[in-house]
Length: 196
Image (cartoon, rainbow, N blue to C red; front, side, top):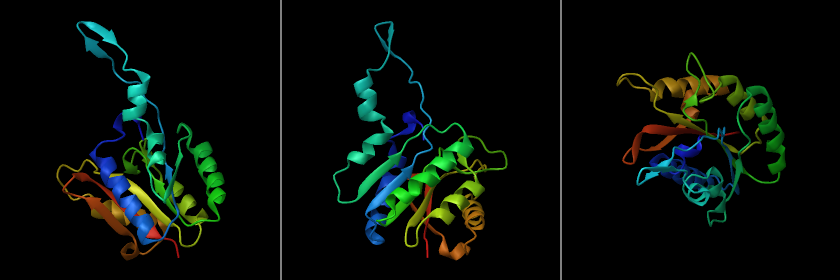
């Protein structure tokens, strides 16, 4: 998750789906694993002078942590450690999960674009990583993964990613559900499953 992409129309879908899933599955908390990678914002131009955007404006408009202040009985925890090293990041996520042992959670993996392609980058989560998180989740928690449209030149992309994630989690594909908001943005879905 990059700062400059926070609070766009895809976030309406993400957080709308997440809060609905939390209600449906009676989860007390949503844990967002943000795969956070900070960015530098471009400058603005005022009468030929290049100026930085004021920090308070960025904090209001592009702060990935601000979702934690939503007024709801469902609490949100944002895991916003900087994502640079896969091994240490995964270890930190796995160490975080037991912190919420006393409550049912929606565990939301929010990489920039979703599950790994053939050549993954820090924009993606690896199949081995989603499996490790899934295995370490509690029974009745809900696993959710953000998936952005893959570049397939107009070809269907959801079925391929759906099958890939089911295989990574070692679950039947039919048990892995899909949510989205096509009228808002057609280039994103969320895959979800409750852990038995």
